[in-house]
Image (cartoon, rainbow, N blue to C red; front, side, top):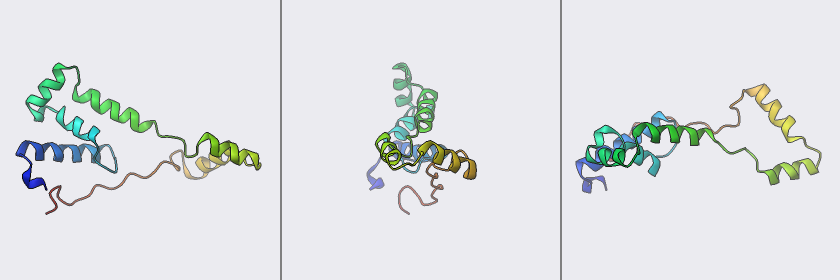
Amino acid sequence: MFRRFTVAARETVVRAKHAAQQLHHAQIGSEHLLLALASPEAGVTHQVLLAAGLSEQRVRDDLVRLAEATPAPLTEEDATALRSIGIDLDAVLARIEESHGPDALRPPASPPQRESVWGR
């Protein structure tokens, strides 16, 4: 599939993959491609995005900020259901964090993969 990409497109995908790995994200998404395109290595694309007010640092900062805003492990509906049967969700969550650390309920970051982007 990647054989049909231009060299610049391949390099962008590789930069996106590295960005996802550096940010400990499990998958490469459009946000990582945007970050790769905003890097100085992207040449003209970088210049166009910068002229439009979108810097590499701004994209990276937004990705980090959004990743830190992880949703609660349970919805408010879940919490209400548990309270209705006598379970104090806040106490349970506090005990989990006390026993296993503050990030115990955060999904683990996937380790970087070593295979080539092009499947070789």
